[in-house]
Image (cartoon, rainbow, N blue to C red; front, side):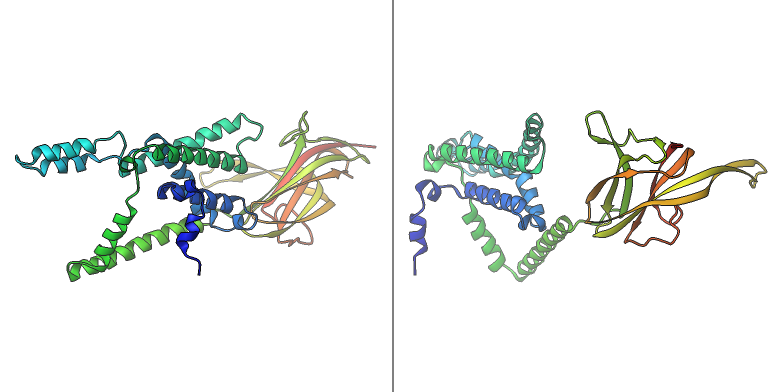
Length: 367
């Protein structure tokens, strides 16, 4: 059997001597890139917790590690040292405080600054990308933040190696493990043991609840959408510039759009109809004795022009260019696109038979 220590000895010296916290930064960096960019893994919920941990903490921690490679002493630790001496040993204790007085920062300050700087660094990198040809997209942002974190980690490692070993910052994970093991497995009283069990269960419950809320977010409103688009002078699709003047026997192109926000895969059917309509005025008297005038649109004649079918996954859109050739002539001919989810089309499609529709008023002249 190969000894694990011999495997470690085969690694390059910079890798073997890399501080544990900086090695953890690189591990999170690699795992996040795999979870976000790998073809199969990026479809799983794994990228959500890794992405949040990476964006909100890791870049700032690497930057702080590069700025402050020295170990720091918290103000409470200095006060404890100064107040623990007496007249006979005061000089010795004071010298210990001066020896530990460095320009570094303690662990709590590092954690707080790491969150703050990460929240500031990521938007700034996105702002820089906004002025580049790549723009603000997932892959450019991921590559840029990862490159910044890797460079900051390398600078932090080099600056720590240049310091004497007793002045370097290190995470006291061994002390934390020993203290936690002693508190959990060797409690002083039975009451402490019960409290430790309750504390562990509470932490596990909190982590599980937050993880579930992040990985499985609640579904939002479920709906579909249908719309039509035209082209501007640059050839871009816009909600304007529709063809409104037709000649009978001639066709013009328009783009049909369908969006799926149903949180499931849906089969859609779109029915295009032309309608000759008229407006009727109805007068009614309300409870206060006032006369209310209402205009009602009445469909006098309807013909089906075309029918389209497509299947869309959740949050997927479909843009379908097609030609329109009205058969009716006259002013204010109404073209209506009726959207039916799940392909359930009635025998006589109408705007009353579906909640999703879009219409366009056109004038059709004789041939």
